[in-house]
Length: 114
Image 1 (tube, rainbow, N blue to C red):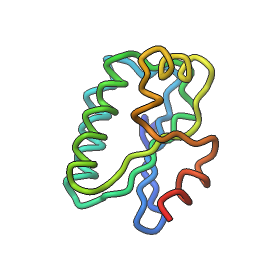
Image 2 (cartoon, one colour; image 1 turned 90 degrees about the vertical axis):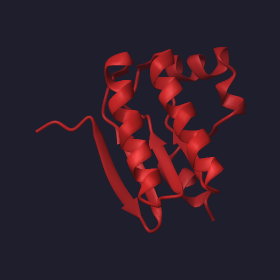
Image 3 (cartoon, rainbow, N blue to C red; image 1 turned 45 degrees about the horizontal axis):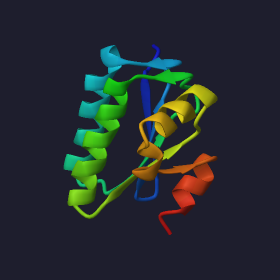
Image 4 (cartoon, rainbow, N blue to C red; image 1 turned 135 degrees about the vertical axis):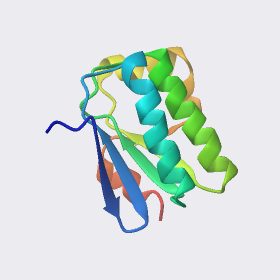
């Protein structure tokens, strides 16, 4: 069965891989619930892997922002990895690249937690 999101634990870090080429309004609410569940279960270090996403819309971006606010309020952090050109453009247009820490590779993102 195809899974839109695949969770992997790397020590105390959760990596949520988004297996969608287009991440839009249709998926945003489910994805937000997935991240909020991780956060509410005590996870304070999350990497969202967007390497397969060719496009994300503003609602999906909003789900990431809500999750980032919630996790930072609890002393944690959420980092992003794997921007394709259109996704990078979205982060630049909305200036969200100033809000999120983003990495080229999953290994760099995981290592950034120290």
